[in-house]
Image (cartoon, rainbow, N blue to C red):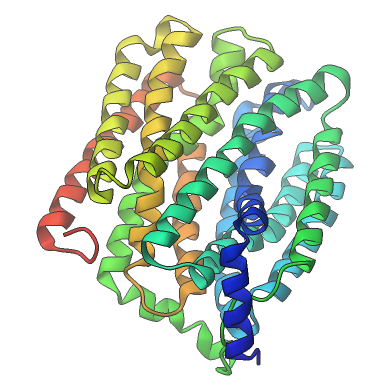
Length: 404
């Protein structure tokens, strides 16, 4: 068991060394975006190469997210029992091996299977980085750090598809996974130099620690907040899976130009998170969340109104939707974590599991053979924005912790 005094001292040092702490936490949190978005420009060409419908090729996204979410449920309790560091190192090692196997895949089914293994390793990174953030920081300071991390990690979906487009212009798609393996090596190197952040590991048997999910499921304020915040992200994940088909197949853009439009959308997430950071001192967190949820609703309305007229008429409403999510996500994540007083690792895992599981449903839904994916995406954003906004007003009236 780690010494409480020693780990607290390490955490104080980490607080004082944000330049070293933030990049590693942001990199670990950004693994899903990097793993997903780099391959997006290759999705239409993979469908042609392997003569498979887009709904099948998109399983490399859907199955990644489902597997990712499933393994999140295990990493949380394991980290509460054994500390954050060892499970994180094991997950990154699996991620590296799986990335190399993905590069060697010769069929859609092989790539889907190896992507599931890659997701099993990647699940350690974002789940445990969120728990590490709760270990090191607290209250408004944690909310501020989450905003910083959101800004840094928003660079990942901006850079990843552009990098993927450049790779496809000069090389072949397997190189995307070779680069992801290198990214995993960088992550392992950083973790090896990072101290354990959990003040005191539990001596409760692992089988009993899984009961923490039972306690969380009996925490109504936590469950309600998780479901509401998961629903708010549904339009974003639907866009991720449908964007390449919309820009490449419907608007006729090249894979490289598509990557720039996707990066433009990712820029909205970074600007939204940065705006949250700058406005937190003058505007309350709950008001920022209200503005963000309303923005998703309005973005869906404009998407239905003008989205079919061209790439920019589609990109601008999506920019509003993604900006609004970037604005509301840091205080939303913090508010979810405020609902629990213990089991931080399990709470983080279950929260991200719900985000990605519902996200996988959105990816599957938009991948169906819709005649007009843009209108479907607009309806998703409009309905989710309205539902989440209404639920948020109800939660504030009910006086849920941190929302009243």
